[in-house]
Length: 191
Image 1 (spheres, rainbow, N blue to C red):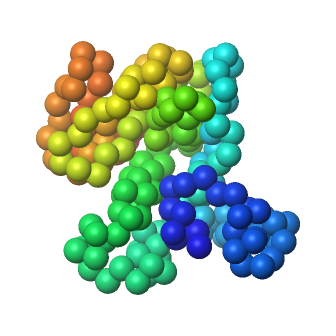
Image 2 (cartoon, rainbow, N blue to C red; image 1 turned 180 degrees about the horizontal axis):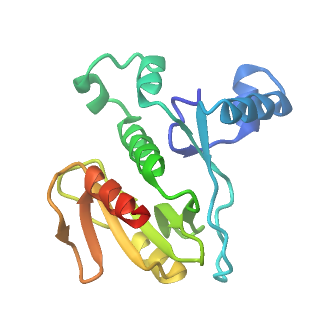
């Protein structure tokens, strides 16, 4: 069930009802999978911005290969046609970014009840923040929600990680970048 919910907000009560278990049992299993590093629970950023924020964590199966195996996705074409393709790419990008992020970085996501959203916020010590939007396609575009969310949290840097290889400016302060390009940016911070 978690593979089907990849990158979504997990409601233990709904999963419990579907599996005919208690929500306490589901929560304990989820906690165990997080402790075993099988699942990532991405917490919402909840700074005081005076807005109604979504406060439910997003959940990712950390290994995209396991996600695909659980969903019986056997090849790239199967993946492209599957509803989990976007969530799978998002989880893959997040895991790779966090694998090279400095130790003092805390990851979050941001979403308001009105749809302003940032897929990944990296909060460095000293409250410096980077806003990262993740797009699976090779010609990324941004929604109004990303711009509104950036106004709320005021990040120092704004990136759109997409499936292409080029680095280019989308606006005066938003950079489209490949996954490896952003990983290189993070590695340069550490050196």
